[in-house]
Length: 255
Image 1 (spheres, rainbow, N blue to C red):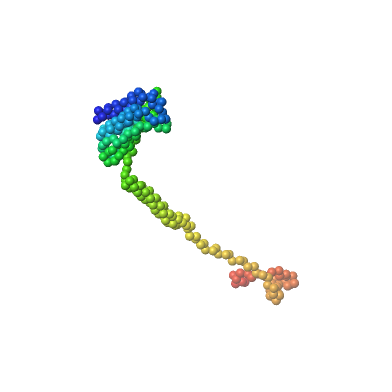
Image 2 (spheres, one colour; image 1 turned 120 degrees about the horizontal axis):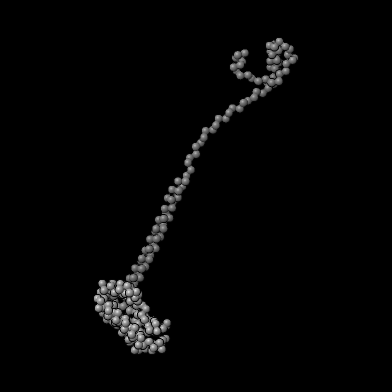
């Protein structure tokens, strides 16, 4: 395992050496077609990186990734991480079908290697940019599996089904919540219902004291006046009757 990792690191060092020897000529060709010698060397180095990376077992791949992260080499760690993501889908490495190196619009370098694996074709890309003193250095690597039309349709159908299923589940959940509003409203009304009012018995109205009106009966007045005069042994002329009121029954009984 360690021998494979050392070979991989050696291959990366070869990239730097290759760029160091051809830095001047590559700078002159920036924005144009890549020099044939530089393109061939770049493709060879990239193909070697691909072959060495795919030869690592699962355990060796984990150790190589951890070692690169420990050394803070994010570019090499990204190479191992990208290969781990497609390793199960691609299968074992079979052969390299084609490779091509070009200069991008930004003046950087891109090498595309198409390889055949046990289960499908994979497109391996390596990206480089000018580093210190004009020496290009690798910046990132990527693996892109090629899927058949049936696999693409199956994935599209699965994504569509999952998307629509999620939407319908959310709509069903929302409808259930809305249907529960009537129970929530009834519960709130029940908790907020006022207590039945206690009807108080009407207080007894005190009987109005009816004042006896003056009896407008001349004969009765005359009889009473005569009785009082006889009782006091006086003349009735000196008596003036101003009002007549009924006395309580108890007093009349004592009279």
